[in-house]
Every structure is written in C-alpha cells, then in structure tokens.
Image (tube, rainbow, N blue to C red; front, side, top):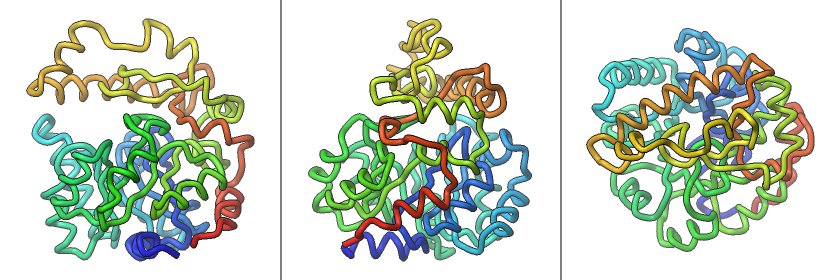
Length: 325
C-alpha cells in the first residue's frame, strides 16, 4: 500500500480509501452512516442535513453515530465575510462537531486558516477542496492535512482540469491527494490509485444507492445517462456545475445573464453573486429530493459506469475488491 493511502486511511479511520462526498441533495444521515459502516468514509453536508432533511444538526450527528460506530467527517463551505449569519452558523456547527467527537473536516472555497487552527487544537484532520496547483500549494502552506482534487469529470461544482494533470502538477506534494470526480465503478477507482492518488471521493455513485434520499427518477436518470448527457452550467454557483441535460436545466440556457456575469468578473462582487446563485440553486435542487416532476439533476461523468441502483454495502463490496498496492 502506498504511503499516501496509508496516511489517508489513518487520517479518516476508513478501511477502504473511498469517500462519500458531501452533497446537496444526497447527504442524508442514513447515506453518510452506510458509507462509513461499509468501510468507506461518509462526510456530512450541514445545510443538506438541516435545511433539506430537517434534522437538528447535533441530533443529525447523533443519529449517524447510532447507525454506525465507524468515523465520519463534516464539510464546511467558507464564504468569508460575505454572509455573517452563515459564518456564525458554521461556527456553531463546528463547535457541535467537535463536541460530538468528529475528527475530520473537509473544507470548501475560501481560506481555511481559522478552521485549521481550531482543528489542530482538537486533534482533527482537515482536507480542502482544490481546483488547481496554485490553490493546492496555498492550502498546503495553510497547514491542511490533505487535498481533495476536484477534476473536470466531477458532478455538481466541478473542476477545470483532469485527474492526470493534477497528479503531474502536484507530484512533489507530500500530503495525501484524493481524486474527486468521474469515479463510477471499481475500475475507475483502480485507475485513480494507479495514478498515485491516496483515495477517491464519489458523489454520483452514492446518489444511485438505496440509502440515498432523492427521487427514484433522479436515481434512474443517473443509471440511464451516459457521459454525453452531462452538461456544464454556471447558474448553480457562478462556476461550472455538471448536471444531467434535461428540459428544466436547458430552460433559459446554461449561462448566467449580463448582470450576474458582470458581478462574477469583479472580485468584490463575485462572492455575493455566487451566494445569490447558490441560494437560488438550492431551491431548485431541494425539489429534486422529493418531487419526481422536477428534473434539476447534478451528476458527474462517472454516470457512464453506473448501471444500477445498489445498496451502499454492495457498492463498497465491489470497491473492496480492488488491489490497494
């Protein structure tokens, strides 16, 4: 087993280097718990846990702990000073996570320096989502323990470069690199490990599981779709998000209009534009959780290798058969 994979397993407490990534929709407690219980590593998306699935945050974490005795993580999206109310809420979620014994944080966007400081004081590992080498080096210097490399094959907010390019660019970095994007089956997993990744993060594959609480039409769309059915839109969060091409998605086009485009090009306005789009997007995507008639379906290019809706245990059984050298 390569050194980075050993470190990843130590950092997470997982048995198999497979992360069930935080998703909206998708990160219901039952799914997070099932991923960890089957040997992988589930990560909580706090807004999905509370606003979408209706759990008090602490009670949601406690439910996961009742469903599995295996470790899991929590994701924190950092918006800086753009939303004081959200920042205060995130601080409370972090305090509760620490109190409930969570030992792994996955941070997204923004600068995680404050979170890293708090984490180190509480013996918590921090991995950060990165889209390229520049951000990766900055996050390493900020003291994170690992990097979640978001490539262009991912679902939801996607990256801008290939998994292969990440490995080439970050070959000298000595902290674990996780391949996030385009992993649909055990063969994809094996390829990522062979490239030198410590592990993988999957979202779309876990959406198409029995434990995930989304509509059956969403799950079936993942099974039925091919790579060619995945399109990019910047209407979800201001940057590219990968979604399944549907009439709902294509209505009004895939790109934002001139006003939002102007704001996205201005550093001082960009974060406000992104927050507006994400708030609007959450309303659309929350409907896909419970309403089969709404077809806003985020998914990555790994759909081409997802052929059926399975239990999490069966998905992980396939991945556990991969030789981790």
